[in-house]
Length: 189
Image (cartoon, rainbow, N blue to C red; front, side, top):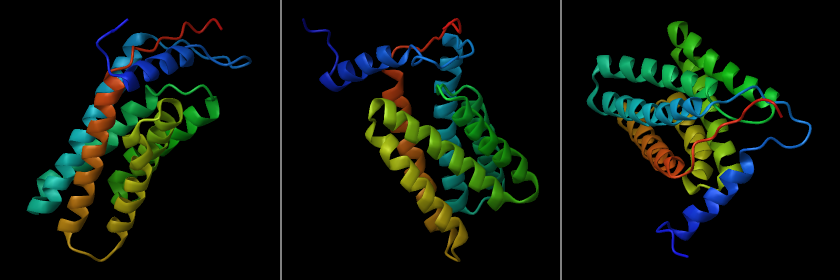
């Protein structure tokens, strides 16, 4: 039977169906499908905000840099709070890193970026673990690279290029994630 989907999409959908039920012994709070929609929109917002940061660094426009920082930290924070992972400790780790990213952006942007990039890298690693998205395997490494570029005394254009790569990877992942069915967990497991 031909469903019209690519073979790799069909395999990911089968894995997604398997992942819709928590493993034995895991108690999960309710996760309605609308939360998965929010997560998916937040992934696209992350990609867009990293693109804004890239454009700001490449153009030297301070307003774009500030917008990129704040939109990145806010979109990662929203994604972290709508992120589905079975282990409570991992949920809170990602939420904590995202909160550090959001709060530190006020007084210490470099620390804010550390939280933002770390939280987003963990979310991508989980997406790779569950669904084997190629982009999700690359995002943690790209995040480390961007973090190192932020620390290095190099021109803003190089850092902007790093954010551009990170943005493109998140677009790739967000589009792939859209092909999966919406996740929903009743919470009465």
